[in-house]
Image (cartoon, rainbow, N blue to C red):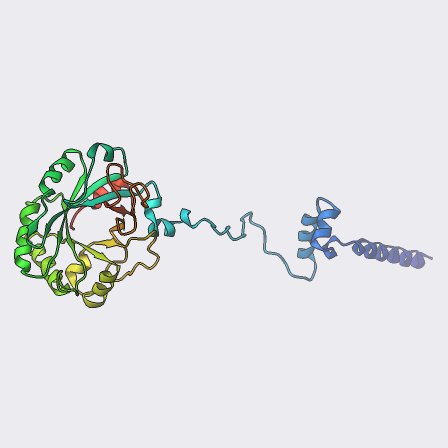
Length: 301
């Protein structure tokens, strides 16, 4: 009789155990378990750890979901490099020659506009507005730069003229403007290298190189191992709204990008960037960095 009662008890326990697993929430689909009761997600985790199925990694509270993809490329670091003039924290520089007009009072309204680069000379001729505008720009606190438009011919004489105009001022950013190096009018690449080396020998400073997309690629191909060029900065001319095809080589990135002029703007006020007090024919440049960054890097070292 005792044995019979014991067997009945054991059978009852086994039956109850079987019934308790029939409605196992772990066997329900995820959407069903969520609807069944508020504790089903926790119950599912507990069951997975107890049964012979796959076991979830312990939840340490971190979110393993991949971050959302930024669908607005203008807000990314990459985009701000390729179109930095769109970012209000970047610095703007104009470059002028005697044929451009400047209203200095109006230009002062633009707090991003902090530098003026001016043509000092072209071949063996002096720009008639260079000295006058240098005095005004410096008085108003603008960064000042001088560019020499290199012509084919006596490189030594061009260096002499350029350095005479710079007049030993280490705050003047020195630039060699390279145009089409193959058309017979402007400096060749070999002459440009000679110019750079002569300026360095006499001043201990290396001019910035101004070059458009085509000339930059030629320099990358022909003088990539030149130690003077390797230490120089690039002022890159490309009149378009972005430079996704920037030709990295000697220069991993540009120092300044000349992105607007009469080449891609035919009406004052309609340019990619409009500097107050200037017309559509004013060349406009951007520095990928803040005003303070540009001031710190405005040098030929």
